[in-house]
Length: 195
Image (cartoon, rainbow, N blue to C red; front, side, top):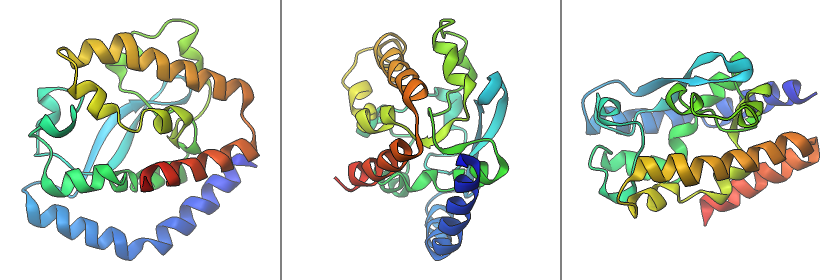
Protein backbone atom coordinates (compact mmCIF):
# COMPACT_ATOMS: atom_id res chain seq x y z
CA UNK A 1 0.00 0.00 0.00
CA UNK A 2 2.80 2.43 0.91
CA UNK A 3 4.57 1.80 -2.40
CA UNK A 4 1.38 2.45 -4.37
CA UNK A 5 0.85 5.73 -2.52
CA UNK A 6 4.48 6.69 -3.17
CA UNK A 7 4.05 6.15 -6.91
CA UNK A 8 0.71 7.94 -7.19
CA UNK A 9 1.66 10.92 -5.03
CA UNK A 10 5.07 11.45 -6.65
CA UNK A 11 3.55 11.24 -10.17
CA UNK A 12 0.84 13.73 -9.23
CA UNK A 13 3.30 16.22 -7.72
CA UNK A 14 5.70 15.86 -10.66
CA UNK A 15 2.94 16.65 -13.14
CA UNK A 16 1.40 19.51 -11.14
CA UNK A 17 4.73 21.19 -10.42
CA UNK A 18 6.27 20.85 -13.89
CA UNK A 19 6.07 24.63 -14.51
CA UNK A 20 7.83 25.25 -11.18
CA UNK A 21 10.54 22.76 -12.18
CA UNK A 22 11.14 24.66 -15.40
CA UNK A 23 11.45 28.00 -13.60
CA UNK A 24 13.87 26.52 -11.06
CA UNK A 25 15.94 24.90 -13.81
CA UNK A 26 16.23 28.21 -15.69
CA UNK A 27 17.19 30.10 -12.51
CA UNK A 28 19.92 27.57 -11.66
CA UNK A 29 21.27 27.58 -15.22
CA UNK A 30 21.32 31.37 -15.50
CA UNK A 31 23.07 32.06 -12.21
CA UNK A 32 26.11 29.81 -12.40
CA UNK A 33 27.97 27.45 -14.71
CA UNK A 34 27.29 23.75 -14.51
CA UNK A 35 24.37 21.39 -14.83
CA UNK A 36 20.91 22.09 -13.49
CA UNK A 37 20.82 18.82 -11.55
CA UNK A 38 23.21 17.44 -8.99
CA UNK A 39 23.48 13.80 -8.04
CA UNK A 40 25.21 12.17 -5.15
CA UNK A 41 25.44 8.56 -4.09
CA UNK A 42 23.55 7.83 -0.89
CA UNK A 43 22.96 4.63 1.05
CA UNK A 44 19.48 3.16 0.77
CA UNK A 45 17.51 0.12 1.82
CA UNK A 46 19.54 -3.00 2.54
CA UNK A 47 22.76 -0.93 2.66
CA UNK A 48 22.79 -0.41 -1.12
CA UNK A 49 24.10 2.74 -2.75
CA UNK A 50 21.86 4.66 -5.14
CA UNK A 51 22.13 7.90 -7.09
CA UNK A 52 20.03 10.63 -5.43
CA UNK A 53 18.96 13.67 -7.48
CA UNK A 54 18.64 17.32 -6.49
CA UNK A 55 18.62 20.70 -8.14
CA UNK A 56 22.16 22.07 -7.99
CA UNK A 57 22.49 24.70 -5.25
CA UNK A 58 26.28 25.03 -5.07
CA UNK A 59 29.10 25.98 -7.37
CA UNK A 60 30.22 23.02 -9.49
CA UNK A 61 32.76 20.81 -7.69
CA UNK A 62 31.87 22.11 -4.21
CA UNK A 63 31.36 18.64 -2.77
CA UNK A 64 35.10 18.04 -3.13
CA UNK A 65 35.61 20.66 -0.39
CA UNK A 66 33.42 18.81 2.13
CA UNK A 67 30.07 17.03 2.35
CA UNK A 68 28.45 19.18 5.05
CA UNK A 69 27.02 22.66 4.51
CA UNK A 70 27.28 25.17 7.31
CA UNK A 71 24.54 27.75 6.93
CA UNK A 72 25.02 31.34 5.83
CA UNK A 73 28.79 31.21 6.04
CA UNK A 74 29.08 28.52 3.36
CA UNK A 75 30.13 30.54 0.32
CA UNK A 76 29.85 27.51 -1.98
CA UNK A 77 26.06 27.94 -2.10
CA UNK A 78 24.70 30.14 -4.88
CA UNK A 79 22.09 32.87 -4.30
CA UNK A 80 19.43 30.79 -6.04
CA UNK A 81 20.71 27.82 -4.05
CA UNK A 82 20.03 29.56 -0.71
CA UNK A 83 16.44 30.18 -1.75
CA UNK A 84 15.96 26.60 -2.98
CA UNK A 85 17.44 25.16 0.20
CA UNK A 86 15.42 27.43 2.48
CA UNK A 87 12.14 26.11 1.04
CA UNK A 88 13.49 22.61 0.30
CA UNK A 89 12.80 23.11 -3.42
CA UNK A 90 16.16 21.56 -4.28
CA UNK A 91 14.75 18.21 -3.12
CA UNK A 92 12.01 18.02 -5.81
CA UNK A 93 14.03 15.81 -8.19
CA UNK A 94 14.03 13.11 -5.51
CA UNK A 95 10.48 12.38 -6.63
CA UNK A 96 12.24 10.60 -9.51
CA UNK A 97 14.00 8.46 -6.90
CA UNK A 98 10.60 7.69 -5.36
CA UNK A 99 9.23 6.59 -8.74
CA UNK A 100 12.29 4.41 -9.34
CA UNK A 101 11.83 2.71 -5.96
CA UNK A 102 15.07 4.01 -4.44
CA UNK A 103 13.14 6.13 -1.95
CA UNK A 104 9.76 6.58 -0.33
CA UNK A 105 7.93 9.82 0.43
CA UNK A 106 8.38 9.23 4.18
CA UNK A 107 11.34 7.40 5.68
CA UNK A 108 14.75 8.08 7.19
CA UNK A 109 16.70 10.59 5.09
CA UNK A 110 19.46 8.80 3.15
CA UNK A 111 23.04 9.41 4.26
CA UNK A 112 26.35 9.33 2.39
CA UNK A 113 28.51 6.24 2.76
CA UNK A 114 31.19 8.11 4.74
CA UNK A 115 28.81 8.58 7.65
CA UNK A 116 26.93 5.28 7.32
CA UNK A 117 30.26 3.55 7.88
CA UNK A 118 30.22 5.09 11.39
CA UNK A 119 26.81 3.62 12.35
CA UNK A 120 26.54 1.21 15.26
CA UNK A 121 24.84 -2.16 14.62
CA UNK A 122 21.63 -0.75 16.15
CA UNK A 123 21.76 2.37 13.98
CA UNK A 124 22.14 0.19 10.87
CA UNK A 125 18.46 -0.74 11.34
CA UNK A 126 17.56 2.50 9.56
CA UNK A 127 18.67 0.74 6.39
CA UNK A 128 15.91 -1.87 6.77
CA UNK A 129 13.41 0.51 5.12
CA UNK A 130 13.45 2.73 2.05
CA UNK A 131 14.88 6.17 2.78
CA UNK A 132 12.47 9.06 2.41
CA UNK A 133 12.01 12.61 1.21
CA UNK A 134 11.07 13.56 4.75
CA UNK A 135 11.17 12.17 8.27
CA UNK A 136 10.69 13.37 11.82
CA UNK A 137 14.42 14.12 12.10
CA UNK A 138 14.22 16.49 9.11
CA UNK A 139 11.46 18.40 10.87
CA UNK A 140 13.22 18.60 14.23
CA UNK A 141 16.52 19.51 12.58
CA UNK A 142 15.12 21.84 9.92
CA UNK A 143 17.82 24.37 10.94
CA UNK A 144 20.67 21.86 10.98
CA UNK A 145 22.84 24.17 8.84
CA UNK A 146 22.65 26.84 11.55
CA UNK A 147 23.60 24.34 14.28
CA UNK A 148 26.67 23.33 12.28
CA UNK A 149 27.51 26.95 11.44
CA UNK A 150 27.68 27.74 15.17
CA UNK A 151 30.20 24.96 15.77
CA UNK A 152 33.99 25.32 15.74
CA UNK A 153 34.15 21.84 14.23
CA UNK A 154 30.96 21.23 12.17
CA UNK A 155 31.84 17.70 11.12
CA UNK A 156 32.58 16.60 14.68
CA UNK A 157 29.33 18.19 15.87
CA UNK A 158 27.45 16.36 13.12
CA UNK A 159 29.03 12.97 13.88
CA UNK A 160 28.86 13.17 17.68
CA UNK A 161 25.62 15.08 18.25
CA UNK A 162 23.35 15.64 15.26
CA UNK A 163 23.66 12.30 13.47
CA UNK A 164 23.04 10.10 16.57
CA UNK A 165 20.01 12.21 17.57
CA UNK A 166 18.54 11.97 14.06
CA UNK A 167 19.16 8.23 13.90
CA UNK A 168 17.40 7.74 17.25
CA UNK A 169 14.35 9.54 15.88
CA UNK A 170 14.47 7.43 12.71
CA UNK A 171 14.60 4.21 14.72
CA UNK A 172 11.53 5.34 16.66
CA UNK A 173 9.79 5.96 13.33
CA UNK A 174 10.65 2.46 12.08
CA UNK A 175 9.26 0.88 15.25
CA UNK A 176 5.98 2.83 15.13
CA UNK A 177 5.40 3.61 11.43
CA UNK A 178 1.87 3.70 10.07
CA UNK A 179 0.05 5.21 7.08
CA UNK A 180 -1.65 7.80 9.31
CA UNK A 181 1.71 8.62 10.91
CA UNK A 182 3.21 9.17 7.45
CA UNK A 183 0.38 11.53 6.48
CA UNK A 184 0.96 13.55 9.66
CA UNK A 185 4.70 13.73 8.94
CA UNK A 186 4.06 15.03 5.42
CA UNK A 187 1.79 17.75 6.83
CA UNK A 188 4.35 18.66 9.54
CA UNK A 189 7.02 18.93 6.85
CA UNK A 190 4.96 21.42 4.84
CA UNK A 191 4.23 23.56 7.88
CA UNK A 192 7.88 23.45 9.03
CA UNK A 193 9.07 24.65 5.62
CA UNK A 194 6.51 27.45 5.54
CA UNK A 195 7.54 28.66 9.01
